[in-house]
Image (cartoon, rainbow, N blue to C red; front, top):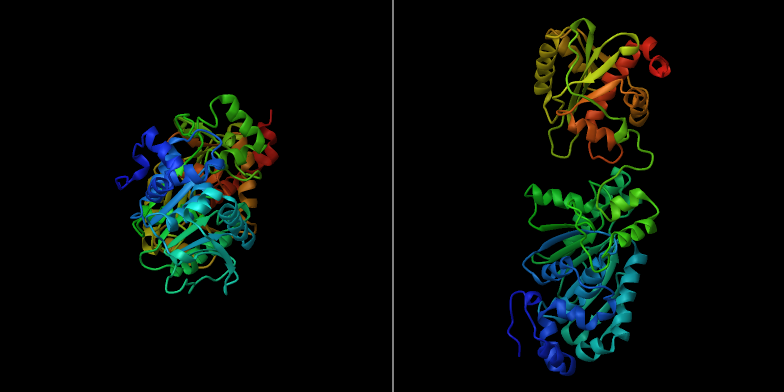
Length: 489
């Protein structure tokens, strides 16, 4: 009736054939079984409020490419990702050419899972065209406490569950889930802490993935919530070759200023209207532009960062170079890194200033490599004069301090930390805001990123090294910098 192509979404269907689809059930069902795009446009046309965007067509293409076993989508809020991937695709995957037997939809909460299933049920009950063409359908409660839709004629099922449940061993007759779809598995609260993010990732890898079989297809869609969120963790796994898969990123406005959905947002006024609806700049950046932004209680803001182009030429003004070292022993990929930050102190009284030197160390080093790197920096920095090394005095760091002294680095001090990281960094913000600590134009990007993203950035080792050196600056020259009085005017 119609030639079957690998990607029916890109096929051109004539107006005459469209008219035949409208009037002839056999023509219509033959085409919609091959094309998710036409399946959606015929049975879910009431979801289409604005002209389709190119990224929507890409969404449909990706659903039709069944050879992509792992597909992860980050898209802006209101992009219709749930309508396409969680509402329409589970039905087409069973009723269409992919002929899936057990679709498992996973959500963050049971309430969300029930809502997804309720939406599907309402469509199947109230969508007369879909029901007449591809029905009948029925609903039942299963032994796992999940709500399911059963397609008796096709021996298929859609089940919705949540990350609050154990789903390992889930089956429909002889079938384990052959399509797993995750939709908004996290929220702002769950990604706020490392423990929350790890809990979601461990559930996904320990419960959701094992629920499937070797040929199960897994699709996760969501918004950008944190750089170490589930979706970003999966992206990292793909980048590092740990898993095969496709990761796609769809902001409302890209870096060139191009709007992804011009049919919905044809003018700048439309964009501004949508932005005002959020009522929050952070939410707009995160949920629509897909940019990670710190919380409202951000410790170091971008306007606190002051730069220098060249170091002072007056060698007589040189006071000391402070080298802060945050030690980490593990070399595992997800472990903390060893960080070293050097601040050159120059000037007297009101003119005293700290210059962060380029070449920040932020790497995974073993114990011996760490000692050699500290010695290398110490020798290099001592060319300009006196250098003092500060290392946090906890656990095995005390051994490192003693070993450095044994190897000729005598001016090394163990610093006992009595406050939390946020408080330590906050105590340095006066130096940053007043430009009493400046950064090089190049060579400290990682440190600046960690400072301005503290509380959001995945790693903060460079921040720890920086605060060790900066707080030593404060303690050593407290009379010049007491409460910022000397440079307040």
